[in-house]
Amino acid sequence: MAKDCKELLIKHLNALSGILDKYNINTAKDYTKQYKKGYEEFNASTIFHIGHIGENIKKLDDSFKDLDKSIRWKQLIRLRDIAFHDYDSINTDFVADLLFKDIPKLQALLEK
Image (cartoon, rainbow, N blue to C red; front, side):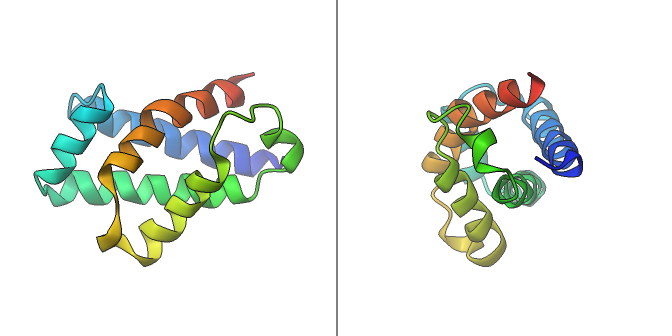
């Protein structure tokens, strides 16, 4: 895995974590509820970072992804495409599920 890819992933993961903390989002249900309120600052900023996380996941070596096969890598990458090209079709329940199940696993893997 390229060092800059890892650094960018960590940067966007940390930024996303900061946004969730700012809005006191601790569960998938919290995320969905906040997103559906329609606050553009929250929605746009979370989707921006989710998109960049997906973009950088695309650049990861398969050997890195093989370290944790429970992470839904393809779905995280697909979120990038939706975030950047089909913003209005975002399924907030699915995004929230990935945020609170797969993103923590990814963060832990990057910290190893």
